Amino acid sequence: MNNFLFVAAENDALANCKAGGMGDVVRDVPRQISERGDKVHVIVPSYSRLHKDGLFKTDLKFSLRGLTYNAELYEVKPKKEFSNIVHYVLHHPEIEAGDIAHIYHNDPEEPFYTDAIKYFIFCTAVAEAVKQGAFGQLDIIHLHDWHSSLLLFLREYHENYKNLKDIRTVYSIHNLAIQGIRPFADNYSSVKNWFPHVDFDYMSLMDYRYQDCINLMAVGIRFADAVHTVSPSYKEDVLLPSSPPEFIGGEGLEKDLLKADEEGRLFGILNGCNYKNINKEEKGLIYRNTVKALFRWLQEESKKYKADFLAHTGEKIMEFVDERPKFIVSSVARLTEQKFYFFRRSPEAFVSILKKLKKVDGIFMLLGTGAPEYEELFRKLSYEHKNFIFTNGQSENLIDSIYLESDLYFMPSLFEPCGISQMLAMRNGNPCLVHHTGGLKDTVSHLKTGFSFDGDTYEEKIKSMLDSFDLALDVYANDRSTWKKIQAAAKKKRFTWAKSVDNYYMYLYNFDKS
Image (cartoon, rainbow, N blue to C red; front, side, top):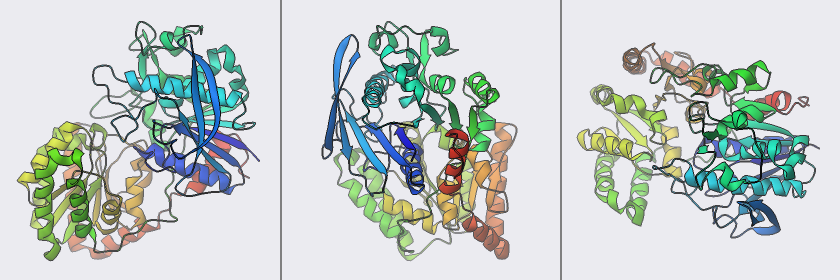
């Protein structure tokens, strides 16, 4: 039996421990590993809340800032039990909940200031737990994004944690744009402040652009035994330099990624999608679920400032309860530059889509929260356009209804390491319209399982997006047999975790498929 440790900032196997797609991966991959008879330990920070009903396992003492730190390891109950998987959280009072999904902090003045401190403490405590044998004899440590890459720094340079070199360590990149860059010195949230007695090689750790800083994403890429991007096409993208907004590639780390590729350490393996135990809403509840979500949000103190807008959305949705639209386009995503840059830079293109929908008695439903400037843009457009329903919050039931009842799922991501939304929409037989990039390229085929757009310049991309939208509406209205073929082909696609984890075993973990 192989013994794994997964180290991450998020784990959707636990309640209230997810901000993005990484949480899904950290939930689903251990389940596949357990099905093969291997054992997995999964550890995340407790964010001062997740340990409260946990079973205390052990105290962990270690040195940081020249002081003795004491953290506590707890075993916690997941949402669903699986054999061979044990979930842990690590508690220390300085690892606090942030303002993004009660996980990450947002420090506009000094990016990553608070998060770096949290994850310095978390990773050192995890290294100590491994050293003490809290997870038994480990064969593989699998790290996720920059929040866990400090383990590789400790493995390389810290006298107390040389034992980590005996364990194969894999590093998965979920979001290359967020790199965890912090100063080497002269700052409370700096490497020298937290590790004053560790001798390290500045050149091996530094960010090429900010040479007085460590780049923790780069540390993961430079020191891991295997590095993993979450789709094959995204692997090809990140080997090239970014030239925004036309192309988002290696984001300053393409040299490190090219070196990892030349050394045979870089692998692009597509994320899977869950096809079992799906929470399914009944058909026909999309408007009722919207109203229910709006009422719930209106009762929350934190949503008071949005009360007028939520009431406005409620009035709009009530009109569609009796007079149902003939075509629903939808999108579910965090409202960020990655997901909706095209709409923010060209709101007129989005308005053009709404006008095209109006002609066919269609609506656009968008669900999400995120960057204030994106929320403001979509609230403004909602007040101006009757057929744009913007539900500015989070509701699992409503999300399920949207995936179930949409006619076309829209995903115009500027870049996409893998993407899960298109897989969830396709699982229900909904064609998607996507930007031909990263993991979207690997999952949606134009006029076979959906529609895509592309171009060499920003203007070409916007024109292609509107042309593809016209094409989708035309096929839906005038060529039902082709539309039904696309629906059936989308529904038939299977991006299974079993297949992905076969590749993990072979390439990342260096085991045989068996």
